[in-house]
Length: 234
Ligand SMILES: C[S@@+](CC[C@H](N)C(=O)[O-])C[C@H]1O[C@@H](n2cnc3c(N)ncnc32)[C@H](O)[C@@H]1O
Image (cartoon, rainbow, N blue to C red; front, side):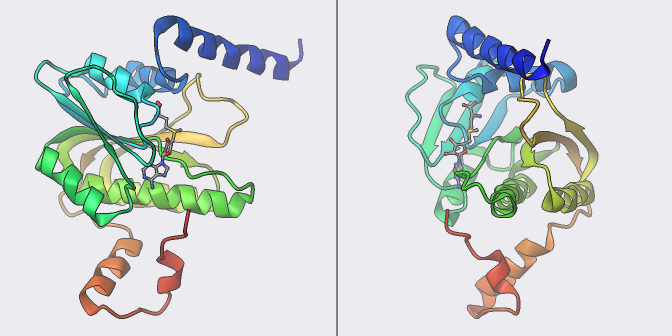
């Protein structure tokens, strides 16, 4: 039996399953599989979902968290109401400082789980797409540095490639526990992987990229090499 045919059947299977079970996207099963393996939602009350539209991960998190908890979803795109009283959504760009400030207000340094399934619009030039995707993953990491509980879980999508290897090292500098995982619901042909990390280090250091940004904010003037880190415009 050709393996491509098997993959297509598998993808169709998750698509159909999502329809039947009332999930907004087949991506829900990726998060369910991540939870089944790592138990990321055990005892979780406060969850932040970056790149949350159309809401498949929001639905899963809302089902799993403790009573009285909150799931906050942020996306560039509007997320249709979920009609769940433990879910709030913000329409905005995670790269925007004002959006980050709004997110901070909800959590006050108390998130049990921060997850990012963010991906840019794909333009088809792999190096550019991959760099932009990792840039989003780094922003999620910066937010986790500020908002995640020390023992909290960080779940992040990455596109595999050169920049991804550097990013994994950055995660190892930040967290005591770092694992790579490809959930069965993720298309085999796709370059996406998920990194599951836990336990922020006390003496952690953020990637160099953010130091450059912070210094620039203070100086109000460009630093050598800053153009590398400017908003890539997607
Ligand atoms: C793969 S989808 C997320 C699917 C979602 N986890 C679900 O289960 O429904 C990736 C999302 O990342 C969002 N995204 C990309 N760049 C973003 C940014 N800078 N700020 C906020 N969201 C962003 C996209 O709009 C898109 O909805």
